[in-house]
Image (tube, rainbow, N blue to C red; front, side, top):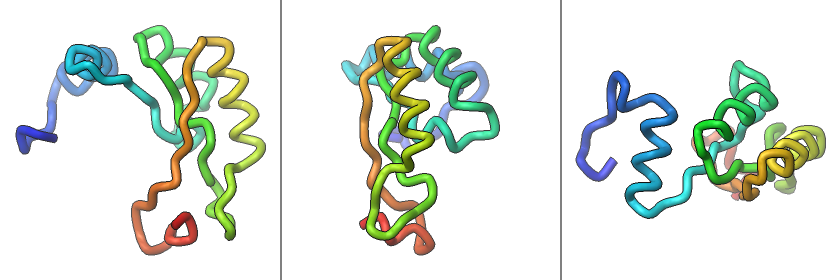
Length: 103
């Protein structure tokens, strides 16, 4: 991000990204883990084994109004984060006009 270029090849792999974040003094967090093609269980298990620090646990997957975290996904991610001793974060950001209810 700061260099104006995106990593490619092996540099874009999760383990390399997590290592780079740690080398820079940061904490690595997986955003909205129940929103990908792979299950949250599979993703969090894999990423925990690569050294990630936390997961975005509280997230509005269904874009409710007013904003609130989605109960089903939150419960699952909380269980997984406890299993792997990961910290939990909350995401209230928006990535487009269709998601403005989050603000």
